[in-house]
Image (cartoon, rainbow over all chains, first blue to last red; front, side):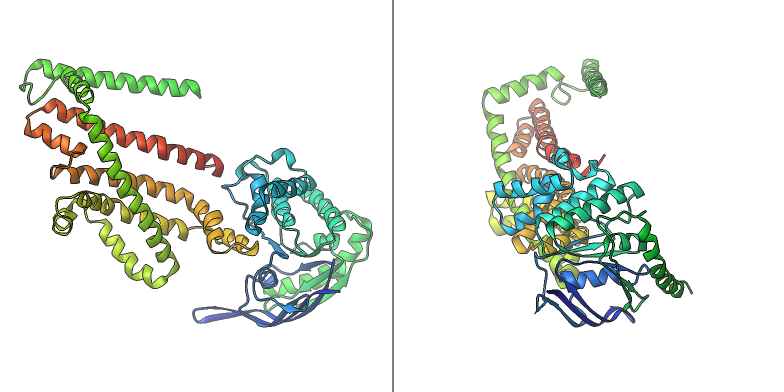
Length: 254
Length: 255
């Protein structure tokens, strides 16, 4: 079943006299439970694309349908994990995870139960009373993941969430994310500029072109899960995607 | 850590002891008569006397009551004005500039106007305390809201926060570092303005006790009341705002 039916004709940023077209003719269908990775040169409008799906940005021409209904605003069924994470420094770990449930109006006991469930999933129960500044980068990442999962969304939108992490932490989170995805069967759209990461995680990898971005190529990845970045079959899949991408990056640099 | 605090306390204690000694020393030189420059002991006696006759306690309660009302009004209106300025560009560009100008006006200069409007009444004194603190609170609410990283707001919106929940769960806590500074400053402005206002007519507060000391030529009482004014100012600053601030700093990981 289709969860998202995306048909963006164009998205233009205006700043004073200059206007920049960032997205152009993006037509996509995303199935329920699919793990889609989007790779593209930096600054190609991947974040803008996610913002549109999240319902944070509707200043574009075209139409995006969520379960057949046009998106007109945010929904608690489509939760975004931002690159900067944006964990709330005034709340401890558990309260951060409970945040969305508070806006939903879930009663306290229930909130706590759900928060602990997801903190357990990301192995952070021991740190539930910590404040954000006391956590390492990988832990912060996991809190952001738990906070998003606690909303029990249908669609998880992830914007280069692991970009700032060291390789080991990232590998570990790749495994955890796949496990969570297999267990909870969410639809995930994952943006990255790292092709290996995209191949490691996605059922499908879409390569975005440089600005104005459109879907340049699409690759199906049919490998056993959970995958790890150093898996043998993976390298093979990476090469053609990398070729497509480096062509686009070359265009930016010229 | 503990040793450091102890050492600092010791330094401060020595400083005040030296100060007290110097004071006594100057008194003992008898350069000025005692009714112009009293001895520490005379001030101490005036303090005891003032508290024993309940004059000081009453004045403290009256002044604290007034400052609470004035400060409360400032917080209420300051919050509303600050939010309006943040929400509307035109209010920011017009009223916002106006507020910045008003902030430069010493609050006591409202006194003649206030007397004409409200007469020699409670209202006049409270009005002056409000004028002393309102604009600094308005500005801190405004700049606190303005400097909230937009990521917090986007996340909250994405998770379904709107209006009151957004304000209560995100905007206020996210602006807390600036709000606490503003409240602290607002409090000290309100307190100063209040004392200045109380000086000016029979008002029964601490400021009035200062004037009474002058009229009775009782320099010991004046100095005793000055101590009380300083102590209250510091106590509220350290205890009320100090606790808020250290809690906030611990959470955010400042320092």
